[in-house]
Image (tube, rainbow, N blue to C red; front, side):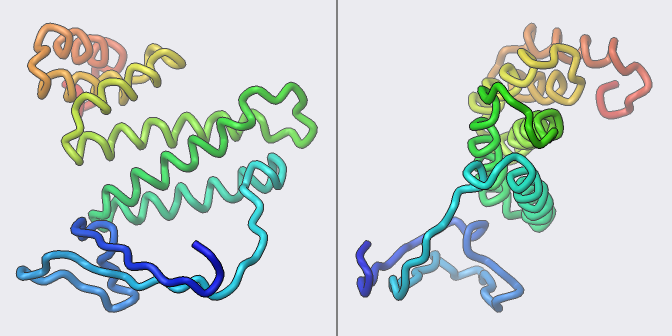
Length: 183
């Protein structure tokens, strides 16, 4: 878009537009929402990765908290997108050789947590293939992650891959025999 232009954005996914704080509610006859956007002013915007590790960490923690709230409110698609953006932004630090600000390890942990939270969203959205793939990526980093094993087992069960699902469930149960979720 150019300065001064308008566009219309439509969404049929209530999870993307319902907002009690703005007074936007969904009723049973609701077929979606249209937003009219007007590009009024332009300001430079630095991506979190361009601000340095400490600023990126602060930003990512805020986004993670916001995504968690979205998930609690049932806005699963919006939460998923927030977690994905966190992963995308923090991935820019994975290849950095220096750790001048000492934020490398917390960034890696936060990126890992965001990726794991993506799997929870994908399961709630019934995107079984994507959940299986993302859990497998998480498990490549941390093979004994019980949440990832359990979630991959759930997705594989829905995909009809019962023997593989059983392997994941048994491994999760072996790692945490007292965890009631995996028993």
